[in-house]
Image (tube, rainbow, N blue to C red; front, side, top):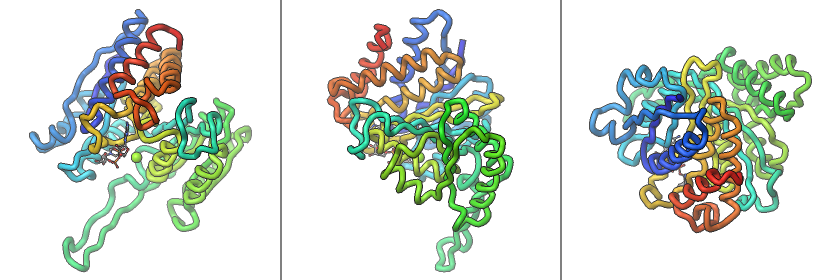
Amino acid sequence: MHRIAVIAGDGVGPEVVAQSCRVLDLVASQDPAVSFEFTELPWGTEHYLTTGEMMPQDGLDLIRDHDAILFGAVGSPKVKDYVTLRDLLLRLRFGFDQFVNLRPLRLLPGVRSELSRWGVGDIDMTFVREGTEGEYAGLGDRLYPGTDREVALQTASFSRFGTERVIRWAFELARAEGKRLTSVSKANSLQYSGALWDEVFADVAADYPDVETEELLVDAAAMFMVRDPRRFQVVVASNLFADILTDLGAALIGGMGMAPSASLNPDRRFPSTFEPIHGSAPDIRGAGVVNPVGSIASTALMLDHLGHREWGDRVRAAIAMSLLDPATRTVDVGGRAGTEAAGDAILALLADGRS
Ligand code: NAI
Ligand code: MG
C-alpha cells in the first residue's frame, strides 16, 4: 500500500490531478500487487484566503510519512505569487530536501514542435534542476520600501555540498543511461556562485572519466536548445537557470502541458513530489481544456520512484499512443479532445494492454 498525499492546489491543478488519480486507480485495479491510499489536502490559495496560511504550520509533519506527493499547481491572481509559491511549493521542496528536480523533455510522435525542422528523436533531454538552494534561497531584503531610495537585495546561495550532490546525481544518471552530461552556469558574470559551480563540476567530473561532458553558459545553452537540441541529453543546472530553460524545453516538445517533473529527495528520508512543470494556468481554468499529459507523465515518474517501473513505462506508452490521434489529444497540441476525453483515451489504452 502506497500512501499518496494529494495537493491539487489552484487553477487547473485539480483538473489535471483528477486525471492522474484516475490513472493510479486503474493501475491499482489491474495489479493486485499495487494499491494506493490517497490523503487529499485542501492546501492552496483558497485555504490561504480562509485561514491566512497556504498550508498548516505543521503541514510537513502531516505528510512526512507518506510515500509520495502528487501535486497540481499553485498560484492565483488573488494573492501575490511569491506568497503562494514560497509558502507551499517551496516549503515542500526545501523542507523535504528535494534537491533533484528531474525534468525529462521528449518530443513524441504526433505532436508538432515549435521547431518544426526537428523531429522525434532529435529532442530528448533530461534536466536535473537543483531544488533546494541557488537563486531560490529566499535570502534578501527590501530597504527603504516605497521611497525613491528603495533597494532590493536577493541573494543566491550556492553551497559546495548542495552543488556537488546534484551534479553527482546528474553524473550517475548520465552514466546509467550512457549519455552526455551538459553543465549550465554563468561563471563569466557570476564570479562567485558561477565559479564555484564550475569548479565543483570539474572536481566531480574527475570521478566519471567515462561520461562525456560539455559546459555551456546559460545564454548560449538557450540558443543551442533552439538551434541544435540534439546537443542536449542530460543537463544539470541551478534552480533558476533550469527553471527558465525547461519552459523553453516544454515549448520545444509541444507546450507547457506536455512536460512532467519530479522533485526528488534521493536519499528517501522524505517523500518526493510529482508535479507537471506548468503553473495554475488561470487563463484556462474550469474550461475543461487543460492538457493532462504533464501531470499524468509526472505520475509515471511517481510509479518509477515507487518501484513500479513497468507501470511507469506502460503509462508513458499509453500517453504516446493517445497523442497520435487528434481526436484524443487536447487543443494546445493540435487536437480536439477536452481534458476528460484525453484522460479517457489514456485510461482506455492502458486498460486494454496495447500499450
Ligand atoms: P502557466 O504554466 O500556468 O501558464 C502559461 C501558459 O501555458 C498559459 O497560457 C496556460 O494556459 C498554458 N498552459 C499551462 N499549462 C497548460 C496545460 N496543462 N494545458 C494547456 N495549456 C497550458 O504559467 P503562468 O501563466 O506564468 O503562471 C500562472 C500561475 O501559476 C502564476 O500564479 C504562477 O506563479 C503559477 N506557477 C506555478 C507553478 C507551480 O505550481 N509549479 C509553476 C509556474 C507558475
Ligand atoms: Mg517554472
